[in-house]
Image (cartoon, rainbow, N blue to C red):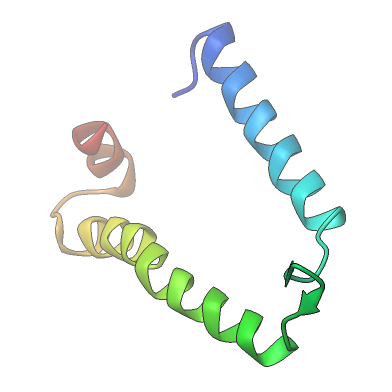
Amino acid sequence: MITSFTEITCIISFQILFVLSIVAYEGLSLEGYVFPFWSEVVGWMVTGSSLICIPAYMIYSFIVTPGSLQQVSRCNS
């Protein structure tokens, strides 16, 4: 449960930064060379393969922990 002003500020700031980074995204270039689109896709796939473990484990934890969703979320926080 979000209870403090600091937590709310952090969450809103992160969401704003995330949205702005997507809106202002430009292709990758280095010293005048523009990398092809497929190389950016491969890079994001490698990054995503590491990041997907965090929410995947959270979902797994909710599934295997006995009790209702409310009890499980209270126990894991």
